[in-house]
Amino acid sequence: MRKFLMVAVLLMTAVMAKAQDNTNRIGVGLGGYYRPAASMTLFWEHETRYHNAWEFFAEGRVLFHGDLSQLSQVSQIWDSAGKQWGVGAAWKPCVYRARNRYGSARIGVTLGAAPTDFLAGIHAGWQHSYALRKGWQFYWQAGVDLMIPKRYDLFSIGAGIGFKMPVRIK
Image (cartoon, rainbow, N blue to C red; front, side, top):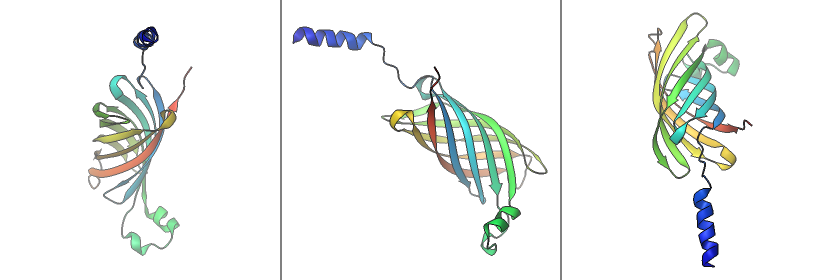
């Protein structure tokens, strides 16, 4: 029995444990903002060591203007809304780690357009991810966006939720 335990301990120390370093994920998220707005984000995330990650994303946003209670149909809301889109990148250094979850600061930039304007944005916030089975993750995030040159939408405070799906590259 003692020899069996010694062999088991040697094998466990010899076999290299691999965490979720250098993994790629595709994700989708939905969000809302303090000024009435909704967004959808599609992204690709490359996780480096210790849950630090780079994220490259495309985002679409719908800004609602006026009193939404006066509009009776979804088509009226959609027609009166302002639409924006953008692409960008974010660096997400891991700040907090625990079992099956971790939290990252999220610092990023966006370039995009609205029907009549060019937009640029700087993002700062927090993303908290929870590990699910088979490499999937659920996350929530909150943050503030500094949008330039739109003065009425200079600061956008919002939150969102979504899922990350692992990508297997062989």
